[in-house]
Length: 590
Image 1: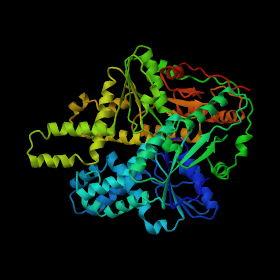
Image 2 (image 1 turned 135 degrees about the horizontal axis):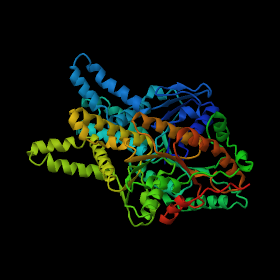
Image 3 (image 1 turned 90 degrees about the vertical axis):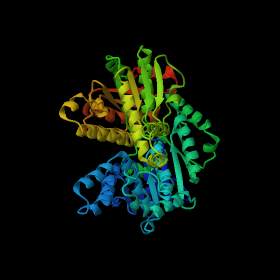
Image 4 (image 1 turned 60 degrees about the vertical axis):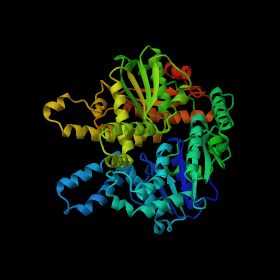
């Protein structure tokens, strides 16, 4: 595994690259050497509990099957509930009930949820009495965009408190935050101390994942986190035999590594081979932690029977009829939402429709995926920085237009609140939804946790609007949430991989959407070896392991589904993207 690890170790990277597997395997490796470990998950879509076959939750929990290991999953919703109670609790019996309800409402947004999770993160990072009980604290973090925002927050909020700027309504009374100034400053110091902290950047050997690692590395270095290490996970082994797909996958991995930015290539590197099994359960993790490479080299599998899976083109046929509407692609990071969204958008445009392809992902790379143009297809991105700047300008031009200098200055300060970004992004999201009444709008969303926070803001807005209208007015109003809940206007596609953990997390996402009154239209199982053609032993074994998960999607989770075969060449560019929709499943060779 990794050598000479400091006290604090962060695993981060693009979603779906194996951060949790590496974090858990590193935990087991250290614990087997007699070290006491605290494993912390800050991922809104955490599955550490599933990996360790233990119910963990928002409190430090002993992993009884792994002596020396404790774990905690920082659940954003639970953290926000605790955070709200810490703010509101002391005021109960002092303030009128109407005032308490107002404060609770202010503390119900997505901004508060993110800050609450961050608050718990910094509490763990800076609690000297707590961390003294452990030899190492391992952090399994959220996908990259979310993590960078969180890691930047100590500095951002320290400055926010130092200058006393903004409306802290989403955070609670400013006086309460003042007490946390020292803790936030300590978090900044600890994160940037190379003797105490190492940041492990995890990536698959793919161009897009390594490009993201490059961006992440630069951003983290800019905020003082320079003790970085690169972990390449899932490298295709050299023993490809005569199998064309295996040879193509190995070449793809090698080409991606050769094209790394010099700054990334210069980082200390550890490479982990592609394995024939999913890393779920302690037995598989222990084999991985022990470096059991023989299991990879000698993997064999019996021939697979041909499976005639529905294709992505079939799913496009299903949604094409109305000639317009919102199609949202959701799922765990790293499952290929951007590629699938771009493929569907490109195919619909090629069929003569007007299509807007947009993203809410902070780590979006739609333009890189398209690598060209298609008549009828336009591309946009909901960029938080751009939307916040536009919102700021709009407010100053309207509300601030007739104010005197002192009042304008106060309004400027109010707009410096972190809540402003949440409002601006939500407004942009709402505008995009309205566009779907005239054309197809294909939305590539951020990884699951971020998306649910955005939907939470949409739901809060929906409730607030309806609460302030009489019955007659309500009948005339169509809120963004109402559009999302209407299957005639919005079709939600859940994208997953044919592996245990991604399918389980996608099922949890479907449950969360159901509680919001949103029913997914279909599921897309991406990068399937079972739908491709291969004779290589390792790939056949992985293909066979997929069949149970594909059957679960087909029989238990979806009304309609499609399976996209593993591609020998990364589907970048308009022609290859359209090819995903034209693909038909092929038998896996005997």
